[in-house]
Image 1 (cartoon, helix red, strand yellow):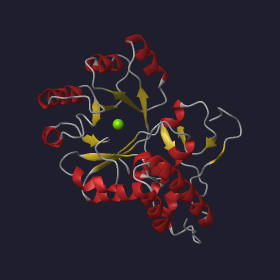
Image 2 (image 1 turned 135 degrees about the vertical axis):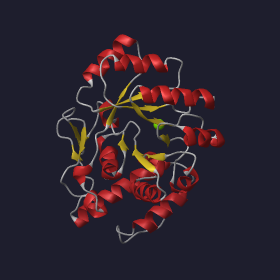
Image 3 (image 1 turned 30 degrees about the horizontal axis):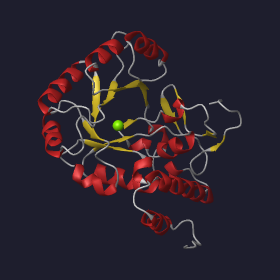
Length: 278
Ligand code: MG
């Protein structure tokens, strides 16, 4: 086992960890996130300052409206009043009904995620035009990630930005995403953490791509870590900590739908004193 004397040597430490075993990006991210917190605290600076990002430019986060009966969808949409952008999962034969139901309640922008669910490129293109006409602003992973040629065909013609999620996991995937997608969805649990995520963001930007930051179901620890990159993204989907009841951390908050980063060193995360108090 290696011993490391210097926690600032993130490049060596995190490369070694990545080489320990293939895959396991979330386990690797846990070390990366803890080390970033330590380094930020040793520097007495939050990561948005270390990276040179303006925390006031952190965007609104989308909030997911789950697929359900029209009555429940209408109710959930009304309850999501605080959120300025809604996210909808598509890729079923109820796609139009779902969008129309939300549109009967609100005209907020909608981001959508097909999760590889469409199989025919021509009907996918038709659907993209219909979605644009209904105020959808972006579509994630419309077709299976292996269908590179079909995805590129769709991206070339799409009236909406097409974002790769399942098809773009790590830094080495970014250059191959050019022409296949308009942009990438970065998640710390795919990228092995903050260090590689920031490299992905920088590379995608230099290649002229759009960038979204997303999450899995996570506590405020990982959400806060991801939020330090958010001032630089086009779309944020960081509602993961809202979906759990046992969040033991207090960090980046969502205030009036906007990601609000704490003025604290490291990740800006502290233990939550009262369970459920956010
Ligand atoms: Mg997705």
